[in-house]
Image (tube, rainbow, N blue to C red; front, side, top):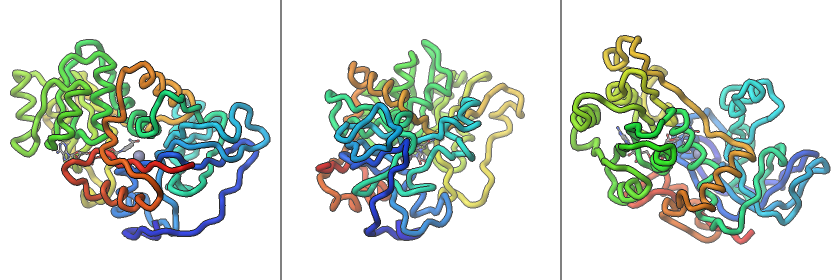
Length: 352
Ligand code: NAD
Ligand code: ZN
């Protein structure tokens, strides 16, 4: 990112490794819709000459003298969020917000991201996980953010066995939420989206019903399908500033509305997001809007790897466009911005 609205290539020095840190050479990287919010919507404010990207698996190039569990040559999963585990927020149970709200999100926010020949990881022992050989790179690169965030959507929705769940938005994050809802034991799962290729994966991951939000009002369609009852949990994984209106309208009293959508400024003017007065039971229906930033850290990545190794979910289905070599990165990022019909997630594989 050269500045808001402008991308390009830039030469930088190799990052320096602190005593508890690591330097990683990426093996697979993936652009995120959040990178699009950062560059083309200026969602986190102005940044000059910042390396983008926060989704990577790679090979350890260098470790600091205090790092115990990793050495050069290890293949690792790098979480998108790399908290300061000793921070007050982490000790309170909110590591993604270490230092400041969203403060665990360091790559391509407070420091250079992973779309470089080398990148820096703080607290290597707590923020890296070994990449099991069994997981192919295009599947592995979905763990740092897509699976971690999408599954968090389902976890925060407090899904119980047999719950009905609606997932609004079926990009790669929403698709991962559908898979997460199924893993959590949901009964009926509504996927709200339109693109045929994504609908196919949504069904594979566990969606039982598809709602086309372009062919009618989402709330009405889901209320009709549930005979006016609504759903036990809602996960918001896409949509514009008005999307919480649908979410509240279709939530049963007591339901969690689990938001993982990034309300970047580009998707709506101003600072206010509407919610529906009656849908929210005039503020009293015990419909809770819960939010979260992608969980990071080593244990999270190790657990996600278990899901993949034991065949609970195949994230490689989301790697719709796989390229080889840094030269293709710009194309991959632009695909994420333009979202052609058949795009789910572009991945760029590198030699390491
Ligand atoms: P995506 O753009 O690929 O998918 C979102 C989909 O929602 C799109 O296909 C879009 O057409 C669709 N949509 C638009 N309006 C809709 C509506 N009214 N109802 C239903 N669907 C609608 O994006 P993604 O990569 O899947 O990411 C989803 C969101 O999650 C983005 O805002 C991204 O920045 C955010 N995100 C958040 C975190 C986090 O930590 N919370 C992490 C990663 C990504
Ligand atoms: Zn992301």
